[in-house]
Length: 275
Image 1 (cartoon, rainbow, N blue to C red):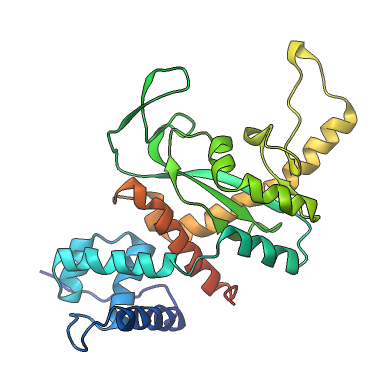
Image 2 (cartoon, rainbow, N blue to C red):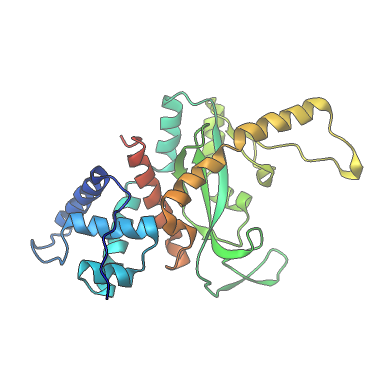
């Protein structure tokens, strides 16, 4: 067996911040002092290695001198602690308004996961795989998000199965609040998949049927909207490229929502967005 040194690409301030959150959680649970195999600091390091590099929990357990089961339990605890710090939708919208943002961007993505066989009935009454996304051609969970005009992620939703359409997921988690925000002068931009979302949610105008061409004003509107809305892609990149565990979840798909909310808190800390 060959040993080697490695460097974790996170700041010590982030590890200390997460360690303080874990310390508070241990006190809340009345965990006896000295009863844990790892200190809060090293539990934070273990979990951040999983977030950053998708390191297998068995390898994490070996490196940190704990069992595989303990490594899984420590990771789950960190996810729970971080997800609890994520802003809720109304708080995110209020802060966006207070910060004077001109508009918001909403979008959805599929977070890939291991296949989870669970059938359901489609709107046509056909048996389909609940967690399979026909749009992304993969198994995973549908997550909705709100972004600032520059693409910085402000809020992410709970997970819906991959077979759920973006508009359906948005109606479940975010659209009602966006209507109120639009009434207060904070509109939202979205792609054509959200057509029919409702007042205050602006989407491109689709090409008319029969080969007709859109007029120049409408084409200009579409061009400007897409140029502004496309910055929302940066938000998902900040999440999935920085925290690579989001590129493929091996845990239960139902945990995807908590994992991405935990990643959102990490992004907010690194960019100085936490209050």
